[in-house]
Amino acid sequence: MQRRRRINPKDDARFYVSAESDKVGLDIKYINAVKGCVIFTSVPFEKGDFLLEYRGDLISKQECERRQRIYHDLLKVFMFEFHFNGKLWCVDAAKEDGSLGRLVNDEHINPNAKMKYLTVQGKPHLCLFAVRDISPGEEITYNYGDSDWPWRCKKPQTTRGTSSEGQHGQGPPISEPATSAQKVSAGASSGFPKSFDKGLDEEMAPKICGSTNPPSTIEDTEELTTESKCIHTAVSHPNQTSPVLGPFTKVNKPLSRGAGHKRNVLQSRDI
Ligand SMILES: C[S@@+](CC[C@H](N)C(=O)[O-])C[C@H]1O[C@@H](n2cnc3c(N)ncnc32)[C@H](O)[C@@H]1O
Image 1: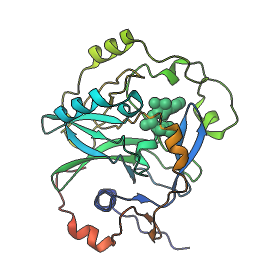
Image 2: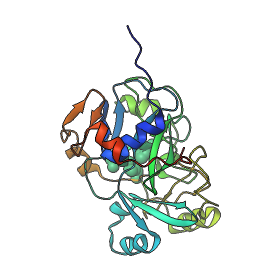
Image 3: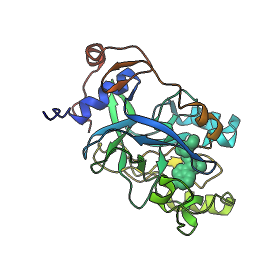
């Protein structure tokens, strides 16, 4: 059988960013009330491949602070702060828009993806790339960053009835949210990244604004955090698929690949 020619990951990411779409072959699966929904792949990916964008509103620090004041905790966890061009920005993915990036779960020991930012038309976009080959049937995960995430505090347990649980060796359901002290301490010790505008090949640790979990550190690279409790919302996602335009594309907005490329202004310094 003929091998599919590999698409340049950066171009691939730009295409999906412009299309505001997710790839076909990535699907939402509800695990349980603790993990909520996660993303599984039914297609293989190679190391370095673009997987997903963490889509949401790109907002300023000020707007982020304003939203944090009015959001419920369950929404705050979808706000991802990062530095770009010397300023603090936030991608707010609280809106349930059917996009998949906001549903990718944390895995700090053996993640298969890493968050980076990609500049498209002068704006940063948070994108997940494979850090190793990924086989069909695997859950997409990335490291949310160093923090005392509640689900990491528990001893590894054997299966709880789902393959994902087994893979991750996750503990029992989150019993208690992090204390204020934990949050303050985590925030104080980490602070914001020295910079997040160094280029895409550096790792970025995310900061989650939610109060349920302590914020993680934004160091200097790229890894996106989403923290969701969108358990109910997520359940409603699985059947909300968008029209399929091509063999590898699931879109939320009608767009041809050619049109997407035309709209993109390639930035040489991206990945
Ligand atoms: C951005 S959301 C990810 C999507 C989420 N699963 C959902 O259904 O909305 C982050 C939230 O997912 C859960 N989560 C993420 N990674 C997890 C993990 N490894 N184990 C258990 N829960 C996890 C936590 O509740 C966390 O606050």
